[in-house]
Image (cartoon, helix red, strand yellow):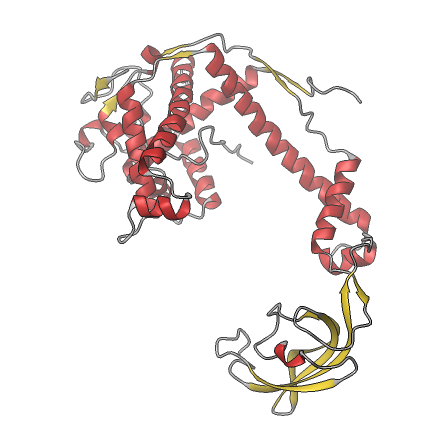
Amino acid sequence: MKKKIMMILLAAVMTVSAGACGKEKQEKPESGSTDTQTDDKGGKDADAESDGGEGAAKADQVSYEADQCVTLGDYSALEISLPNEYKVTKAQIDDYALSMAQYNAKPVYKDTKKKTVEDGDTVNIDYEGKKDGVAFPNGTDEDFNLTIGSNSFIDGFEEGLIGKKVGETVDLDLTFPENYPSEDVAGADVVFTVKINKIVKEDPDAKFELNDEFVQENYNYQTVDEFKEKVKEYLEETNKSSKEVDTRQAVINKLQEICEVKLPDELLEARTADYIVQFTNNNCGDDTTLKDYLSANYNGMTEEDFKSNITTEMQTNLKTELILEAIANKEGIQLEEEAFQDYVQQQMEVYAHETAEDFYKANGVDAKSGEAYERKIFVCNLALDKVVDSAKVTYGAAEESE
């Protein structure tokens, strides 16, 4: 099974390609540059790039040398401490299994002395639905608890029980909606015969019991032990993923502490502008402006505040990229095309993109800039892999025994 490369930059800010500290873009990349969008294997030639016309990524017009922007600290054996041991305990399994079961458990009701049905009451009923005098599939049930006003049934059903007495049997002449999912009764006139057994209310003091019967009915496992074993497997897999993510982020944080980065202003400005274009393309239709979209979906955020937030996030993002690019240069790490294509396929599956071009377009101003960015991030992740593998990580170091 091939190792999945994890994205190490801002998950919510998938930006486009960055194109020596503050220099205008040259016609050909300088020797030693990690600007992988010009890699021959990617079919991306620097001469073919746009001069900044409509749809072009502004960052592609900015060139930089990571080695000139970054002063690397000693990253060969970083000491990292994380408080979590990432171990699954029996108590965690029990708690998670119980919370899952309670979430899916039906409410427990107790009888009341009430005799007349009102809006908001929960009534226990038996009912049978007939079309042309014949009972239709899924139209019959017994001992069913229905809350009046919940709109759980078709129009007229719940309203038809209001004012009726406990013990009474009612015939309801109703019509199913034309767009009802079941073609057998869609638009059909039917009669529901309903017996009102009692009026009940939810019992807040009822204690839920996780037993084999509940597990069999709701989860297709035979025993509680079997159910908990599956919960254990899930929690272990979740812990494994969290451990890797947390470790990589801790290494990134440490790299930012020990490395000095001089971030080119024009690169930051270009990447911020490109992201705003990308965000607008992905979210705003022909009749929707960025201003309108932000107002409707981000609690009235202004375009100025949006740009300020993106600039701040992009600053951290770019510092991480530059550090990892500099490490890749120093270590001689290069992109291997076959591994990169495997990564692209994985990402296409995760994000349901039909083609690589669709994946690239989703992560850039256009497919070209998106591919360049993904190639860069792939190399950055390889550099991060190397630093993580050499780090001395202690787990649970900050935990105090009770």
